[in-house]
Image (cartoon, rainbow, N blue to C red; front, side, top):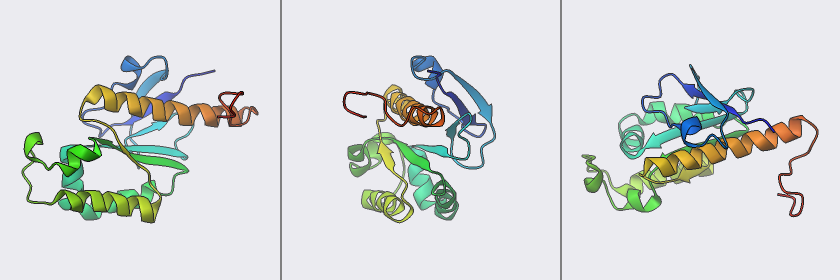
Length: 168
């Protein structure tokens, strides 16, 4: 079973170290210019896109750069497999910004409500992870590798089953 080669957008300023941290799931990484999302998998560029947001970027996108962010979500929605990975937990967002050094008078409900609306209207799953970067990296690596694995199995005539005993 091959491991996916993750394509990382060249504009990604602090890319997750997917291959270095999780070589059991990720076979390699390459930097390329992506039109949508921050990560995809080689061979799945038109099927899969993962957008990553740390907490400061998330707040800025939802409040300051809202029109541009929602336009990128519209493009993201067109992918078969897509998600927005948040480098924070729901609890982190709901507890406010002070402990994260984010100057904002914006109520956390405005951020959470926007994310809920994006998921409900556009069908883009929101993946809350952690402000601990290694946990966010693990979650992204697992998500990308599982989508690749099922796709590869399907493309090669094996069906979409990882574990025969429970058909997962």
